[in-house]
Structures are given as structure tokens and as C-alpha cells.
Amino acid sequence: MWFTRSLAVCLLVVSGVSSSSSSSTPSATPAQTKRYAILDNDWGAVSFIPILLALKGDMEILGLASNTANTWQRQSAHHALANLELANLTCIPVLPGSTHPLLHTPHRFHTWEALHGALPWQGAFAPESQDGNDPTSGDPDRLVREAFIEGFPRGSIDESRSAASFMVDMVRRYPGQVSIYSAGALTNVALAARLDSKFAENARELVVMGGYVDVNMLQVVGDVELANVNSDINLMIDPESAKIALTAPFPEILIAGNVANQIPSTQAFLDEVHEVRNPLTRLFHDHYGTEFPFWDETAAAVMVDRGVVLNTTTAYIDVDVAFGSPNYGNIHVYQKALMPPGLRNVTYVHRVDGERIKGMMKEAMQNPPSC
Image (cartoon, rainbow, N blue to C red; front, side):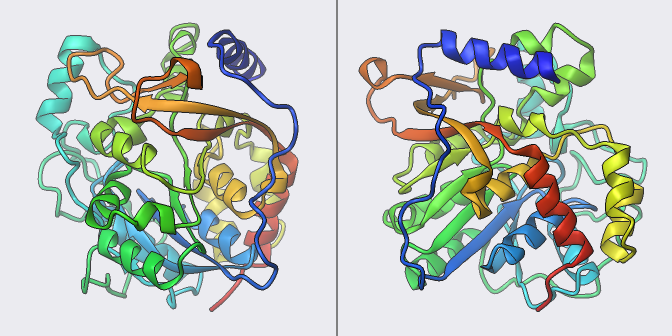
């Protein structure tokens, strides 16, 4: 991973985007102002850590939104319910996100792959699964109960409104106080931005897990798994929504893409967390695995505590939405003097305090919050 990080930083410097070595700090906010969050994710069986981190960071979670990325949103929403039940946090509602991206479909996705090459991870657009894992392709409304290693939920999704409508309503209710966390596709955020032209500017911030930059070389210097870790299904599932969301007028957009690869999961850490036994530490220890870094957890920690951020860059970004491009669904960064019109600046997080983030995770699981 040291080689991966060093090359990514070198490539970013070559791109001509200015960087800063100073720690990032949040915008000045009165001490008495309450912080709220809506967590939008392609929830899986072991997805509860971002929820715990937000609550332990004195943020009130208004709701969880489901989206289609790793799997279809209906399965994702039920994983969210199951995670809340496991964590005894059923006071938090789960809102259904958009099942389908704005344009993309499995057929369209595989047509693009035939033209430009396969992605190592295809998420919900992978060929239809028949093996007891989270569903892909086929019927987007089917549930695969065997995939719920955390336990199949007993509760229900709040079907009274869509996730996008919920986001709009909450930002209107608490202007300037709601952080939108997106660790899956950006479809719901884009729909909210289209529903209400004031949605983005009235939110507090948008924090995104995804948006990798300058990782093409990293996709060829190792095995397929290294290519997988350095590819970006969250944006590729719905590039058009990513472009809408990442050019919307949020007061701040933070991108935790490449940086999340800095904190790998290790067996030693899984064992350390499991020194305190409860349902959360048991599920984490037995099923999180050591194959992937702490992606969603890193983005959540950045949202909760800017003190974990050690290095950032401000850049103007765009998302390639040309279907005929091999970079479709990928980010391109600009400096202000060279950017095309219609873009906005975002903050790229390059380096974080990994030990501090793991400490936050450990505390959150061993001493979890409650309703």
C-alpha cells in the first residue's frame, strides 16, 4: 500500500493541482449549533460502523438512505434495517432510494465494458447472482435472505417518501446543519438537487466516498485485486448523477477517494476490537475480512472529525459522462485557470491519521451508542 499511496500522490502533483500540507479544519460553526447527518449508502451485511461513528461524534442521524451500487437498493435498504436492529438503533428510519440510476442499466454497462474493457468489480450490474450473495442484475426488487449474515430484519422501511424527498425536507428543516454522507452511488443526492434548487446550498456539506484520481497506472501494476481497490464503482454505477451532485452548490464537498485505501483491515485489528464481546464486535471480527480497506469508515470519520485529516488539495472537478469514453464515470481535476465553465471546487483528502480513525472505530464498536 505504501507504493500505491506514493504513486498516487506523485501523479496528483504532476497533474498541476495545488496541494496543502496543513490540516483541514471545519468551517466555523457556533458551539451550540447541532449537527445532523443523512447517511446514503449501498448498505451491506457489516455496514454499521459509519452509523456508530456519526452518533459517537455527537451528530444526530436523521435517516439512512439506500442506493444501488454494490447491490440493488431494496437489498441495501434491508441491510440497513438489519444493521440498525443489530446495533439497537431502530429509532433511525430507513428511506428507500432510487432503484435505478438516471441512465445506466446492466445491459448498457456491459455494452460499455465490451467497448472499453471489464471492470474488476461490477456491483449491482454484475451477471445475475444465484449463489446466496446480494442480488445483482435480474429483478432489482428481489431479496436474497441468505446474504443477511447479520440477521434478516424484522422492521420495515419508511415508504412514506423517497430518500431524495427526505433529504430535501430535512435540509429545509435544518438549513446549514445537515451533512450528506454518500458512500455509494450519488443518484439520491442528484435527485434531491433536481427536486429543490436550494437543496445543496442549504446543506452543511457533502462528504463522498469515491472519486478516485490518477489511479490508471495502479490498475495495471499489480493483480486484479489491486485494480479492484483502485477502481470506482460508486461513480461508475451512475456517472450522470455523480456529475450533477459534484457540481452542485454545496457549501463544501469533501472527497475521500484515494485516501481511504490508506487504512487496510488487518486480522490484528479485528482481534483487537473483539477483545470486547458484543454482537457488533462479533460480526465485525467474523465477517468484515481483511481483503479491503476501511473505505466507508474513513469517509465517515472525515465527516465526524476533521482532526483526522492531515493533508488536502482544493481542485475543480468534473465527471466524464461521455459513454464512448474509456474514462466514463471517472473524475478529471483542473486548476481554476484551466477549467471549463460550470465546475466548482472540492476538497480532496490525501492523508488521514489512520491510527486515530481505527481508535474511533474501536471505541464505537466496543462502547456503542444507543437510541
